Image (cartoon, rainbow, N blue to C red):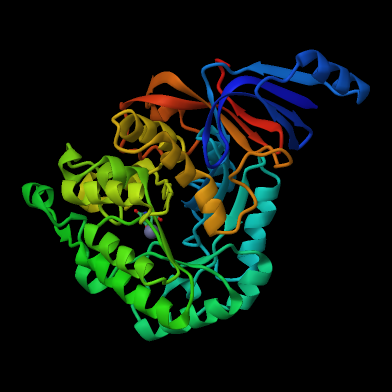
Length: 437
Ligand code: DOR
Ligand code: ZN
């Protein structure tokens, strides 16, 4: 089969181009031109006995399929929250064609059997590429390292104890040393338990108002500082997950200036919300790390603009209604994010002039690809056709009933947002299409 996309605004992973025609044959892009003559295409296709689908995409944006390095697919063990199948459908609807799944499953992804299980399930799915992330410590208990070589051989893309911080510095030093010898990146969930001390919201004005125990910024930044030092001494690659505090960003800026191999991510929710936006005592506002102050929010936006923060990742963390609907103190940490990520970023950051469209797109495509060595994230002649078509003018209210994800725990319910993915393609095959297209 061949697909001809005409008159589309193209982001190729680096730059925006005003209007291009793109021809896809089988899995790959075979031509990108200002104008591709349709009759020539038809002749060529007929010679090869192929069908052709033509899409007039005037007014729409085509970008490489998004890559999300931080997703909780919950399988195995928590299938009532999400499965690899429902999570992959949610990804496709949000324009994501590659996702990496965190190991805080049951059992934890700390052995080759679980990595193989995830690959088996993902391979019979809608085509979204799923990369498992292996645990740093057995059972994410922070006591004993997993077998990094075994996990690497099974195909993990990185190591992380996401959901928990590894408290023991000596163990973490050993983890960085081993990871360096195998060239595996370590993704850090930066949290010091003694400082976080079972808080629920950012330790600021809102926590006081609601009389809820706070989580100080130092619980994150102290671990960022520690793990920069440990990664430096091991010469390892450290990637910090879901940064929330301005102090963390300051340390990363210093580390990068020193040439330490550090990268990091921020979530849409931490970029577009601050604790003043918590309107009621509802579990949907609860996430770890917490949504912090307006000053922190501005520091995160600034850092993303400057490249101190490298990429955007959703930390899609689905939970059941029961786990989220009984107030902030009793609810689990986590927010869903795959299906709303782009529209949230586009509406709240691009349309308001805070971040350019190119920077947002790069943070979701070419940058994560480069950092984690993924052979995707760019559109060029010869590249695999993993792509998403977005209608920047489409305006919709967020309705969780329409989510593909089992998790309805979104902080964006009822937000009126512009810029929705309308067609997602993996290797030239359409895996999601808005019913209106
Ligand atoms: O809010 C969060 N939820 N933060 C994490 O680090 C883990 C995640 C989850 O697994 O629910
Ligand atoms: Zn985390």
